[in-house]
Length: 358
Ligand code: DAH
Image 1 (cartoon, rainbow, N blue to C red):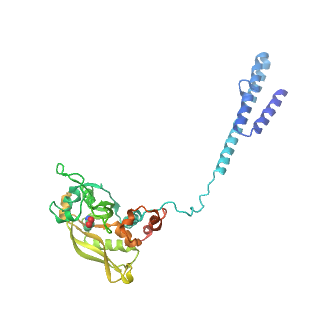
Image 2: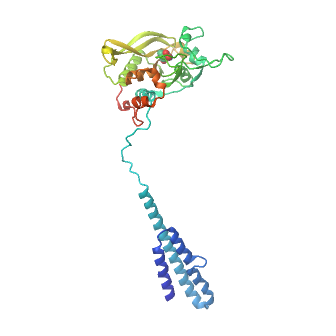
Image 3: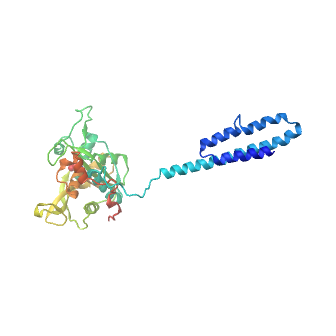
């Protein structure tokens, strides 16, 4: 029994002295492995007589259990300190400021679209989308622009395939076809905006074959011209951040709205530069109108019960006016110096989100 006490303190000291999990495993093998010291003790039981065997067996088993327990406790302690050491080594301070050099930035087109969405989002509009490659019917016919309508020529359409079974595909010339798709798939009340790419075969200093629009559509039982005016005045003032920005509604014509109005905002051109705000001049920024009953009927909506208003605006134009970008073509040059100058930090959330509209 004296031997047992000595063995126990020897093994316990070895377990406590094991500096890592590998050293501990070596101690375990030396004690409890097939040729281990405790296992060796068990093998001697056979040489003892029956009485001695019983008492020795109990003592050997107790030693074996104690050693196994001590090994387990040490293993737990070593694993925890290993994790602590790794955590300490791999620690990152998340409160450190962002690195000063900006690697990439948000394109003014994306920023402008985000701002428009933020303003209309606060007014309860949701975002809808539609395909860039569109059927002629959605892009024109359903919007009350029939085959021989002069507006078709004005749109400088890119046609994809020549007439095929009467269905002709085009690159959408405006975001208005998404009005039709939404009215076909959703029951009123409808309140959507549609940001997206649009295409026209036109290329010069003020036109790009690909550009962006945001469409808006409201359909319900009560909306009227007063709502259209209030909604768009509020949008213009929030977007340009000028509370008393003059907004003018000028009678116009679009086949899909009746009556139609173009929206101008006040500006001055004194001293050569353009300044948005009160002044003696006007800038056109939006097309709008009450949804033509014929368009509602084309989508299967009862025009005796429902009415609404729609609007459309060019994103590049909005961005140029708000951020003083002088040349449309630079939007698509992918010039990193231009982007550094006119782009936005990725963490610049559209500031208008927190603004009260209305
Ligand atoms: N689709 C028109 C265009 O591209 C813009 C427009 C005008 C959209 C009036 C509308 C609207 O929804 O009501 O020129």
